[in-house]
Length: 115
Length: 114
Image (cartoon, rainbow over all chains, first blue to last red; front, side, top):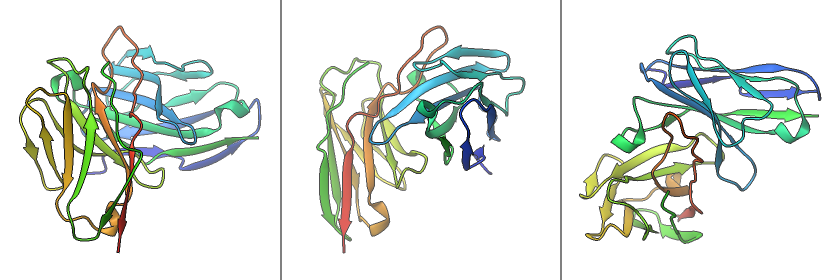
């Protein structure tokens, strides 16, 4: 059971380049999300999905795009990388909402540096 | 969402119980208390959660006061590998139609000493 898998683990981009962070889960979870964590700060929600074909914006969505074509995968696309997007990115998933006591499971993170 | 307050740091001797407190005085009746930890910027690791009753699993115990305004995470026999930042979170996550900020509170840096 792999859980939540993120790739790549490390990436360096030049300003203006685009790229996709991959996230896959094998737990048949409906809810998936992307967060970023800057040094010394908590996690901030970028985008989330409550099922295949359904996505919505979180707190800091600008500069990022997502789609959810399958239950398993939830890729995060950086459209035109900026130095302000240098961060650690975490993908997470849960079977259902935490308001019902469901647990969120996190991936190991993707370290992105934009130069 | 309810705000949580945790001490910024704590030390614990290896093999002893680590008791990490969390204040969540504004918690509402249907909000769960979750505990996560993060080791060296790895992905946050789920520890335990509860609503009203005390809970125990293979990692820890969670004691929630009767008025639910505070809780304590107990690691019964702390090891060096338990050194991490521990986050107490109320109402994690999101629901369709509303964006939610995931706030991990201030977190407690637990250092287990040999």
